[in-house]
Each structure stands twice: as C-alpha cells, then as structure tokens.
Amino acid sequence: MSTMTKRQLLGLGLAGLVVAGGAGYALTSGGQAGFEQTFLTVDEMKATGGLIVDIRTPPEWVETGVIEGATLLTFDDPNRFLAEVGPKIADGRGLILVCRSGNRTAAAAKALAGRIPNRIVSIDGGMKKVIAAGYSPVPPA
Image 1: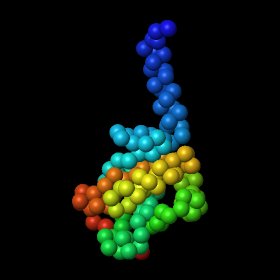
Image 2: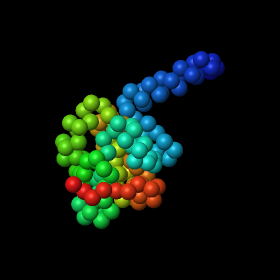
Image 3: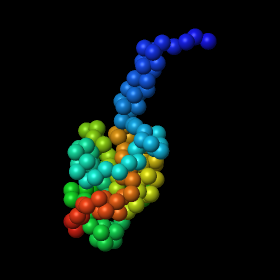
Image 4: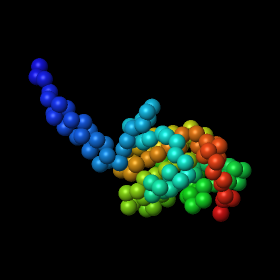
C-alpha cells in the first residue's frame, strides 16, 4: 500500500470539489447529496441570485404572506414543476425552495436532485423561521 503525499491528498479533495461544484451540488451538515438544507435570511436568499420558489399551497400563501418577488408554485409533481421553473433557471442560477417548515422543500429538493445541474437549497425551518428571523411577508399577488 502506497502512502499519499499532502499534494496528492489536496488534489483529490479539490477534484471532489470540482466535481461537486461543477454539477452545482453541495452538502451541508446533515445534507443530502444533490441539495442543501440550510437556513438563509431573505436577504441572503436574494444575494445568491437564485430563483426563490414558495412551494406551499394558495391558502398558505394567503395565511402568512409570501416573500416579495418569490415564484409561487405548489410542488405536487417534479415534471410539472420543472416544466414551469426550468426555463427560469436555464441560465444556471440556483433554485431556492421555501415551504411552511422545511419538510416539503426537503422532499421536493430530494425529488429534483440529479435532475437539474443547478444548486438546490431547501430553506430549513421554512417561512416559520423566515418570519421569526424578522422578515415581514407581503400578500400574494
């Protein structure tokens, strides 16, 4: 068995980052391959340049309000969802998914992972945490 040099180990680490980064995938603590589940404030979401999609239902949008500028599209079928959202992220920007608590976005992100090369972020804690962090939602358009 041969011993690897620090340079070889570094090269392997960088190769892994290039492969993962080139595919637009990342892992966060406790994350799944192909998407991230993390909390971002609305300002942080917008700073990424990603498309923010609220996947809750229309009654939920009315009940709590929505993130200004977010695309409102209930996630019920990955094919229908991608048909609607795909052209909006064809430029390679990330896809940021928001629901009430983060559970539906995790499931949706898992269903989409590997189907698109874009970075996919499931907002951990959902709108409950976004609002608790101080964001004031707007009424749905």
